[in-house]
Image (cartoon, rainbow, N blue to C red; front, side):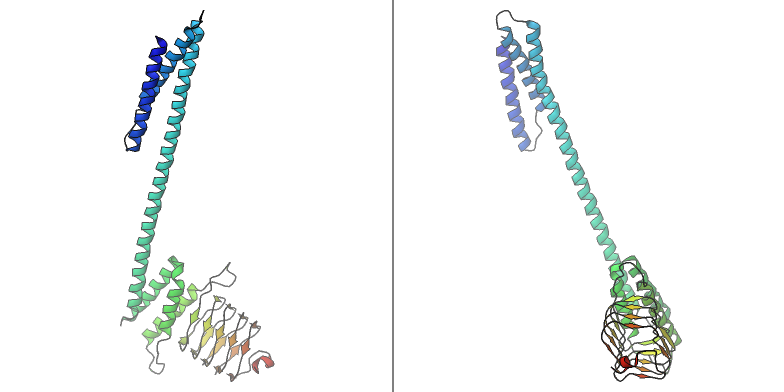
Length: 310
């Protein structure tokens, strides 16, 4: 009788497992606990009844063995349930991380959009008639580049293009001169200092720019273009490190040019350069091709005569 009851319960439990599996595939919950109870009870009755059917059975041992069989099923169910909870927790964590990454990406996108809007607005304000507005736009661009370093080269390009705009020295507008000096200070602030670890190579294109008290001393520059630039009063690039090529072709220095202790890693082109005032080139190193063809100096610079003859 125990054997028959056990078989019935065992078959019923297996049927419940099969139905539960189909239900899970359809997105419904299964009756795993009910199946486990039926299988456990079935094994208990089946094993106990089978052992009791032997001659001179030991009822205690038969019941103990049946209990072990039933307990093993319960233990397997507990292990499966624990593994299922673990997998559910891992999936929940994956979903949570995905949500966080999505939220971070959305936040980054929003910040990028705001930065783009700030940049566009600042560039637009550079064309404002009021000098104080243009100065504010310069500071806004500088702050943007400091907070978003990947904007630095773009900001430098914009500031350099502003300095390349025509400027009439004969009718000096002091307010515009203040804006231009602010622009020069932005360039100085954004260039990495000499000796910095892995400095970024920022390029400066100041072709035809009108500069006064321009100072990028002890800074690291990528490519420096000062073709046909007009340098007034005192300008300083001493102690700087020019990693790219430097072009002073046709530039005119109307005052003092502090260019000592510079390291030119690549080309240093001074073709047609004119110095109407002193130029200090003491201990400047020219590591690449150098050209001083048609260069004119009011006072002989401290440079190898053979180099000046190139």
